[in-house]
Length: 121
Image (cartoon, rainbow, N blue to C red; front, side):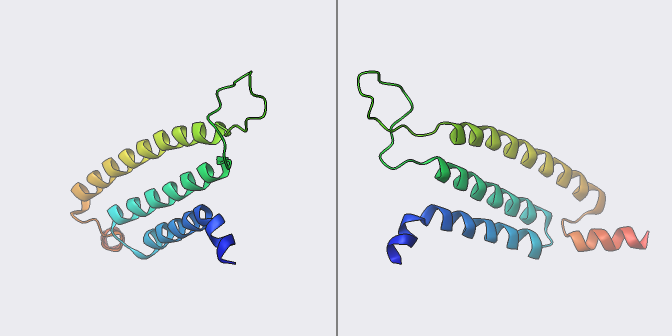
């Protein structure tokens, strides 16, 4: 049982990170904390995809015609993650710029206070 847990530690860590991020998004009312929670969730998905592409005793996918018995690592998950990181950073920057504008408008980063102010207007 312990060996199975160690073998799948990457998947367990990815699930734990996702749950931590989801908890942060759902339970905190501060918008900055929500963005941090979303970033934690994105990181867990990146860890999961990189773990899927891992091959035991695999080598970099540089073809060596002299040795046909070499096992190569799949490069597609890593390439997808690079694209995902760029998208995640862009979304984070955009979210933070929107949060700055919301703070200028409402004077708070607390979502409940913003909703109360909108309902009273």
